[in-house]
Length: 194
Length: 359
Image 1 (cartoon, each protein chain N blue to C red):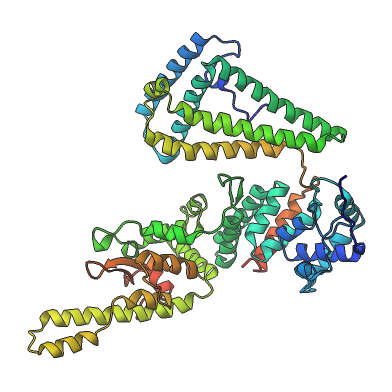
Image 2: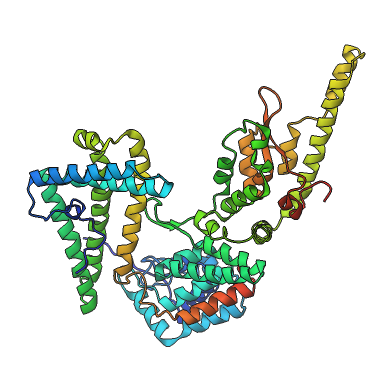
């Protein structure tokens, strides 16, 4: 069962799921301080700026979600549900049961909900939280850039997850890459791709 | 009691199904192809939609029975594929498209220049990124061998297969958007005349042009290691492939340059002249003068109602994507800003594209 792609905020803070609230706060402050120091001594390029923004946003979100018991439990449940639905759908496909379509729809809904809630909405919300703003020196300008960066990151993860899912819109293709190379060569040679 | 509508239509023949599918595959039309499998598809016996009606003529008629169509028909007629198609047309719920037909459709779409349809089909097959890479690799080889036509074609296909994963509400092929990119090129009014893009040194001008025309900074960066001559030859070929009507623009560009020269000469003359004309003569002379507002109209080939400079840039970029690289913004009066042609006479790019007046 793979849970790759479903962001694990405990891992972001380097903590186990059983951690206490005090540990969440200490770890957040420590990691954020290290990150800000690293930013301070690094030459900023466009690419690095995007990565740093993403790191700060994720740290803020991790703290914001995990420090509140209700939010934390909801996050753990939602994550477990999406991981389990993926696994059940994969099993249903392998066994060829009738549940395939309904599981796929349930999984798709759960995945979209998970990604948009925990990798966009709550991340942006964390950027407006007083404690997070103070610790990360987050401003409106950061938020403007971060929403674009987060969207790209979310879509990239969605794509990565999608790659390992069973084919459902199409039968499983048998790709011969030598034949593909020949198709490419002939398309470019005959000049029809204009 | 729920009423069920009785469906009165003849069953759809296998021949019609094969024909419609083969047409969509041969034309590289992913939209029509997917439509043939939806729950209300006219190919389904349990659908109220009838394929034989005028409404669906576009799915059946105007087929060019060439080699591409024959190959598609053969693929559609394969027993395993026919079985899969029949099963999907009878199934309740989302259909599973036959992968071999989608592959053929994608290849046809690339060959016909329908890159966005190809990108969608390859994405369904989950081979879009690898196909993009395969086109780039062969394009780079062609570039090293000096075959610019093939190299540019390869890059254009690769750019065409790009996907916008940040699109809302779901990922979709990224369409060419020269109109907005061109406006970004001209977003800032040059504080000094020599700051204008069209007057930049050749290496900078070529760099910007490649980034703008390829629409993908990562792909443009692949060309950075190439020599200036290779990049120039690549860019010239790219301009001609993207815009088959480039020569029409060149001819209008020359006309616009002549008008600019005429206005420049007149202004020079006026500044040197001590006037002895009467007021009536001056007014008459002014009425016969050339109007600078005509310059963008000549460049575009038509006038825009109340056309601001940026509207001309947009329209120019749509008609001739490379055109905005060779114009500048210019205030001619306090209230009137126009786009006008400007170039560096010695620029190898300008010469290669035939834009210099003495070319």
